[in-house]
Image 1: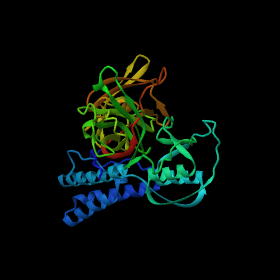
Image 2 (image 1 turned 90 degrees about the vertical axis):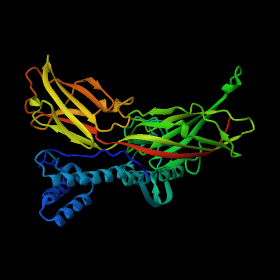
Image 3 (image 1 turned 45 degrees about the horizontal axis):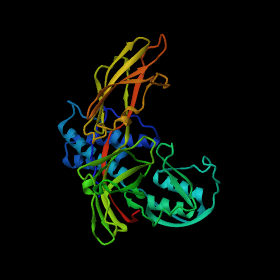
Image 4 (image 1 turned 180 degrees about the vertical axis):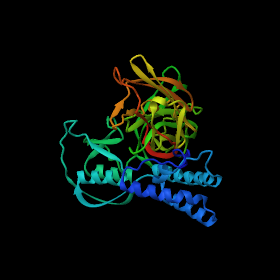
Length: 432
C-alpha cells in the first residue's frame, strides 16, 4: 500500500469560494454552499450528515471549501478540518494509484494509443517521423482487462514493434519510436513493475583494477520510468536497502551502503538512469539472480492557483492551499519596471526544496489586466532559498505609463509534495 506525505488543504477567506469554470462546477459549488452552513446546525445529526456529504463530493470540492478564520464558529472549524483532511487523502491516493486499462479486440495502433491516453491520462506522442522512420498504422490484437498502465503499454508496444524513447522533449508525455531489430521485448523481459513506476536494467559494466584487486567492481544501470501524469522531483535510493543474490543464493556485496543515491529529475524527463554500485563477485558467479531494493520518489501533487486582486496595494497578503502558503510582500516601482516580491512556504517540503528546487522557480506567475488579458513576467530574482521556503521578486514591464492598478496576480504551484515508496526486484542479469 502506498504511503504518502499528506499536506492538508485550506481554501479562501471564510464565506468565499473559488469561481467555477463549468456548469458542473457551478452545481458542485451550489452543493458546497448548501452544506457548509449545516456544519453549524443546532442538530448533531444534521451536522454529521453535512460533513459526510461534503466528504462524499470528492476531491473536486476542495477548492470550493471556505477557509477558517477568527470569526469561524468552532464547530465549523473542526468539521471543515476533518473534511479537508479526508478529501486531500482521497486526492493524493487517486494521484498515486496506478492507472488501469481495459482494451480488447483488433484495432489500429493509433486507436490503441489514443485509448491508453483516454483511459489513464498519460499522454503518448509518436516520434517516428522525427527519426525519419516509417509511420505505419498496422492493426494489432489485444486482450486487456483492468491491466496496470505499464503492462498495458508494453503489450501494445510489443504488438506493434515499437518502443519508448526516454530522451524526448515533451513535457508530461511519453514518446514512442520504431524498435530496432535486435531489441528485446518490453513485456515478459527483465522489467519490474511497481505501481506508477517501471524499472528495467539496461547495462552492466565490470571494472577490474590491475593494481589493486580490492577495487574490482560492477555497475548496474537501471532505467526508472513513471506514468507521465505524475511529476517526480527526485528519486532517493538507499543503498543499504539493496539486496543482491547470485544464481546459487549467495549474497553479492553492495558498495557505499552508507549512501543514499539522489537522482534528480529534469522537467521534461520521461525516465532517469540509476547507477547501482556493486562489488565484483567471484568468477564462478555467472548471474545476478535477484536485485531487490526500495526507492522513495518525491512527487509533486496537484497544482493550485493563488490569485491576488488589487496587487498594487498588496502588503503581506497570504493565501494557503494544500500545505502551501503564498505571501505577496510588496509591489513597488523599480526604475522602469515593477517588482512584486513574494514568498512560498511549504508545511513539509519532503526534500523537494533542498537540493532540487529548480521546479519551484519554474512555476507560472503572471498578471491579468481588468479585461482578463495575460501579462507574463520579465524575469525574477531569487531572494530566499530555505529548506521549506523560497522567495522571488518577479519583474513586470507595464510600459512607460503603465501601473499595476486594477491588475490581478496569478501564481500557480504544486501545493502537495508526496513521498511514494517504490519496491522493486530485478532478475536474472548475466554478469559481463
